[in-house]
Image (tube, rainbow over all chains, first blue to last red; front, side):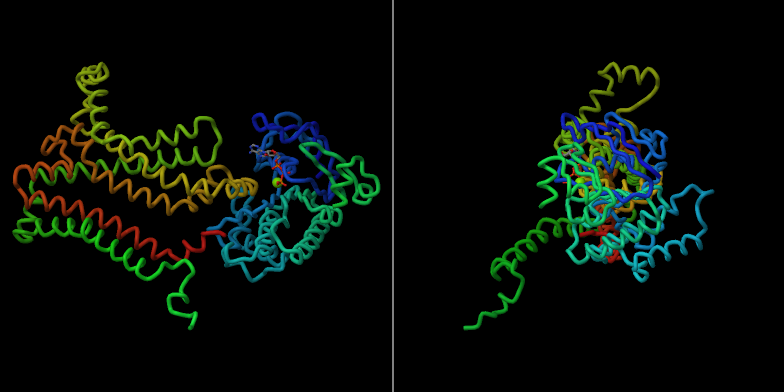
Length: 239
Length: 287
Ligand SMILES: Nc1ncnc2c1ncn2[C@@H]1O[C@H](COP(=O)(O)OP(=O)(O)OP(=O)(O)O)[C@@H](O)[C@H]1O
Ligand SMILES: [Mg+2]
């Protein structure tokens, strides 16, 4: 699914989180939103998911206006910064949640849900942890479970807010690779937020550099390195 | 000289031994003196003439009518305030709006207003001296000195309990789990039932238990709006007072003992639930 963002702006009271920004995300791309703290990355991602409404501008999915679409109807697989796993549910129940929440006529049978959750847990290489609770998992494991939960609903796009933020360097490297693998296998249009330029440059097809609610530059990692459009981009990507 | 005296192998936060003993001893003496001794007195006074006369006192028509009144009031007031409290806590914890701080203060109002004042307020508002009261009387509706008045007084006094328990818990938990449920396709109602409610169930239960204890035990506000009409509007606490003033000490203390037992039962229930679900309780505490 390709996503078009046209003149999207967001204000929180007097605070301008996003100046009008425009961005076109081709279907199946892996995009990084890169920028310092407070630059509006999370705000943009949340607007895509329907968790926040823009003050003005619009969002199109495959050309159709999606600005007023409900959160549920957008079917965005969202991975939250702190994972937001349901703490009173086991890992299995967490991953099954989206399948069980489907309206009755679309809901898979119990056996089918079992099968799909098991397959997802195998995909994230944690087949044994279905009966554990989130607080019995390491940070990296929580992150994988959150990813599996988001994928369970067969989303139309994958949105990740600093997916590797709180993890140590080695785990980050591993998870980066698995995100790349999952993206390549599913072909989902994927947007992830990061403030780590190395991560963005290594992982993404296209990097969007943001600063103070504006998009500074959009480009392939190599192009941005070779031809930064401003001092800000040069300084930020050199760091 | 060894560095490993027993006191030093303990936790770093442990106080020196004398301080600890003083604190533990002090607390024990306080609890014994101010909580346990009065409770014991209630039961010994109730049983002063033996089981039979205590039971006989409880089966007096006035005592039974009072018990019925108290139970009916609690049966209505507690669920209503559980719902109001939940709604208020939800609004405060999950939405941003102006005047929020004021609303929180307002919720606490019943705690800072004396119950007697609350009772008087209701009498002034609905009594024969107000135009609303006159209108109600003309339409044959009684509020003051009747069931609706007692219910209103109890609702007022017990309103903060559930909300107060829920607000900090709901604020602490934030909205991300609910947001996650929504992105996974769950409706708002399903999110509430499967994510919000399970996360707050302990606080909700505790709030409901406290609310119930107060609903059954409320005296001041109810004494004023009810007019304490024996067999009609007297509740258990007001009946205890009336028996006591009439020197019917066995009847007064028997009824008081029943009230005390209701309170103890509430505590027991809470402890039991916490103990039975201890592992789940620990598992649901993230971080
Ligand atoms: N709910 C809100 N209410 C008010 N202001 C907000 C809200 N959410 C975000 N903002 C403001 O909008 C701006 C952009 O915030 P945003 O969370 O999108 O930044 P970010 O790029 O994700 O930063 P970080 O890297 O720290 O997560 C900030 O100045 C922030 O203070
Ligand atoms: Mg952010």
